[in-house]
Structure formats: structure tokens, C-alpha cells
Image 1 (tube, one colour):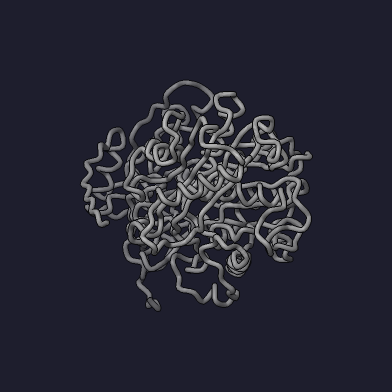
Image 2: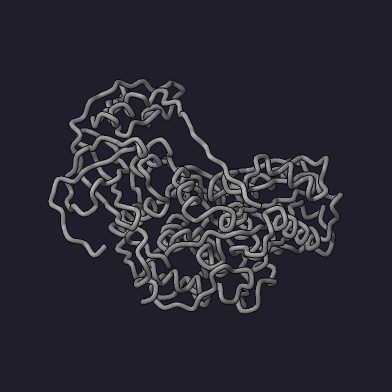
Length: 132
Length: 389
């Protein structure tokens, strides 16, 4: 029995809208906890400083300069991805590397494209020849 | 304690016979019922584990299976926790028995992960198993996320790619004596490290397969079981815990902290104070080869897991056999059924009725089954014990 299902979602961006708007423009919009100043990019919805009580964490949006340092990287047939820390952020971000042929640890945010609206970075370095 | 009165499972593989998940679930359920020496009318609750409606094209599968099994009228529910779905369903069933809400609970897990959709479609769907809004929307795959976690783990632990490859070799070799296994392979270390790269450090043979299949157990209080089954293995402890869903929000993205918390809860319930010496068998969640070492670390199963791994301590003849069934890499991984199959392997080993060639000569007193969803985000651990303990 064959059956085909095609789905076309419209996802409500809710309180993450400023972050996602920033990605579309190529700007890093982080969240900063008003209680402990922790800065997260990608943004957290709850700050760990509020774990011990029932208060809802409150945040401000904070612009980062978009520069990042790659801490770990993986390459494969489906592209390259990294754990990277954006300057000014206290957490790490999972990022798609725009051009996997480029090596280096320093990177900057790249504007997201329509099909992949998540975090993408371009590495500040030179392309190298690869076997693939 | 909760008795595992009956067990049943189908082969885990890629079905090419035109059968479907309702056929497999029915076969596993009826085998478990027969094994428990109970009748359909004895069952008063059904807990179903299945990871995704996208895979099965069936929302609300518990009610459908209750109808298929002839269990109309029983309480039925579906439990989902990604890769941990099967064991979380076991936990839900055990709690029903312990609370007195049910006397005989059937726990049935299934997943048509291999034959219903293309591998590419399943991989894309798995990409949304994590934080779909952030990590998922980068286009990252499960393999790439596990690879990043493994790289952090390798940097901290000094484990290397050959350590990972040795796990793949061992688990596939174990699967050769498991007639239900998806990937029984006699392979060498070199074949693993020379297999095609998926996402470094993981190569194709470091990855568990997408499988079809089903598994089922019947849970009850020992006094509510037929006399002939009262000596079966018991669930002595259950524990579950979650970790930060995004790797980047974790203190150490290479450490499975949620698994550690889940294990500590299960050990406390079972009265286990020194898992590294009291556990005699472990079935752990080796979605990828390196994840097995990460699991052994988080479960506290060894004081020096890397040295012990390199010296064969987790092999079938070692101090603590790990994934004697072949694990996910050898036995296979139909997600909703996986955790239940792990519990079955532990229960049958404790009873001494596991597959010839894989049955441990010295019956383990305690065995631990471990699963997780995400990259060890939703974790579930079950401790089983023999009747005499």
C-alpha cells in the first residue's frame, strides 16, 4: 500500500521571534537574564538562576557582534557542523558551517536561508582542498 | 518489586515480507502472553511505546493495538520519550502495578523505522528529535549531533576512534548468536575505521541501523503471577531524568548527566550502592559506538572505563558483559521496541533462558538496561534482579 503525505507548516515563533528575525538578517540577537546577567545565544527560555524558585525568568534582548569561536567541529557527507561560542555568550551554539572547505576556529554569523532558518556561520579562513 | 512474567519479541530487521507494525506488535504481545502463562482476559492495562506517528502513519496507536489484541475495555495509553520510549513505557507499566491500578499490564513497543519510509526521510525526521527550533533548523542530523558530543568526550577522556571501533566489532559479533538480530556481522577493526565516513568520528559501521520490529512484556506482582512464573526476574529499580536539550547549554556536552541522574534514581530504588561491582550485565544505548562508552561512564559501571574497555572488561568473557544481545548496533533499533527488548534481554539472562551462545554461565544477580532519547536528553534506566535476591 502506497500513501503520500505532504505537510507545510506555519510555525508560531512566539517569544523567540527577535532571535529568528536576527538570524534572517545575519545579526546575533542574544538573551540576557535580568537577574544574573547570563547571556545565551541561542536564547534560553528559562535561566538556570531561577531553578530554585517559582519565578518566571525575565530577559532583555542583547545584540552580539556575531563573531564566534569554534570549539568542536564534525564533517560529513551532509555538510559540516560545529559547537561554537559567540563572543559575549555564556553558552555554546550548534551551527551549520556554510562552506565546509574552509578551515579555522574563528567564524562569524551568516544570514540564514529560507530552507534552513537555523544558526549558520562562515569561517574566517581560507578554503582548503579536500578529498571529498 | 514488579515481576517480568512474560516476554516476547519479533526479529529486528528491515521487513521485506509485506508485513506491518500491527502484525509485529501482535506477534510480540501474544508470545509474551503465552510466556507469562496468562490469558487475554487477565490483562487490565496496555502501555504502548512508539516514537513517532510520522514513522507509523498511525496516531493514537494504543487504542488501535488494544483493539487488534482483543483487549477492548482495558485501560490503554501510549508513552513517548524519543529513544527512551520503550523503557519509559516499562516504567509506566511498573508504576501501574506498584500503585495497584492494574494487576497485569502488557507493555508493547514497536517501530517501523526501516521499511515504511526512506532512510533519508527518517534521518530528516530524527533531526527534529532535538531542539527543532534551534539545533534542528540548522539541518543537523542525529549522527552529527552525536559526533559533536563524542568529540567533546574524546577530548576529555582520551578515548580514540579505535576504542569506538572495537565496540562496533564486539556488538556485531555478539549479535551473531542472536537469532533476532538485525546486523550480525563478523567484522574487523580495520573494516570499521575504513567504512564510509558519516560524520567524523562516526563511520557507517559505528552507527546503529534503522530497524523494524516489536517487543512486549507482561508485568505483575509476583503473587499475581501463575506459580510457574513466580521465579522470573523482577524490576528492582526504575529511574528517569532529563538533561538540557541543547548540547551547547550543557556544562559538558560530552557527558551524559541525565543518564547519570536516571541511573542514580534506579540504583537507589534497587538498593544498589556500588554499581561498578554489583551489576553483572548491562544493556546500554549504543545508538553510536562511542555512546556506549559514554553510557558506561555515566552509569557508573567502572572506576576506569577506558582501561577496562581496552582490556576486554566489557566483553562477553569480561568482568561486566555489556550489550551481550548485540545492542542497538547488532540487535537493531526499532525505537519504541528497543528499551523493551533490553529489559527482555536482562530478564532472560537473569533467568538463564537467553539465546544459546549468549547466555552468561554465571547468572547475573543484577542487570541494568539503559536507554535515552535525544543525545541522552530523556534518559530511562531499569534495574532487574533475580527472584532469590
